[in-house]
Length: 305
Image 1 (cartoon, helix red, strand yellow):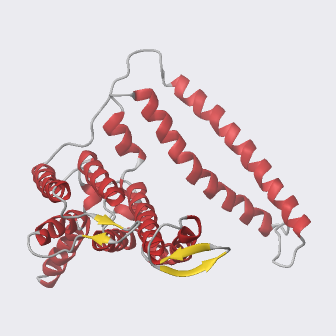
Image 2: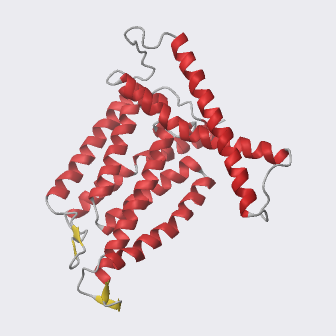
Image 3: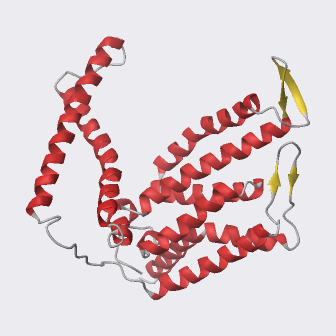
């Protein structure tokens, strides 16, 4: 496997230890097919696989975040039939507009796809850190990759600094209580934003001076690769390409089709189509399988001590 990831949350995640190219390939496949495949069974498989891996990466905080997605899921599901009146099975009418069962089911599919994307993108943000992104694209587009890494780091840094500012103000008695008026909360918020803006501008000047002192932009950029493709990386890359090939084959031959409007037409997962589903689920479960494998190996090694 590749060099150990520097993120504290990644120390026990076997998938994050792989080469960044392997991580990127997995997320491209997972996110792309998560959007393209609207079949209910495949959406459930995607939510299950992404939810398990998201929980592994985030722990209890992951459960809280997943719980917060439930109201969003319900809202998208119920709102879709209001704006989309297509369908043949009318449940009821409102303002002379039909509320159809097909539009409701389609709303469930759209909501599931949206939640699925949030989960995979959350995993992506944890696994593909700034140094991995730079490793992948630093030589191809050094300026763009550096800019994107700095942008991706800016928002988490701003949120962390905002919490520090709020905590510091509370410790000196200038924080806002729950019963404070809206005006007091607004004034306190504007003060925090002002301090945060000053900190961000000062940080940009410091970063600029630091880059200039290190000779950034004065000559052709050199690079040092800390990640190397290992045998495990190559094997997993081959496995992922095989599984993706199987999924593409069944998708191209109609084994994963699902239509909701104006009538429901969902391809059943039975017979030969089961192979496509197993390949898809197996692909999505690769990170979890690697982590379970490492846990089992650790427990076996620990029992021998």
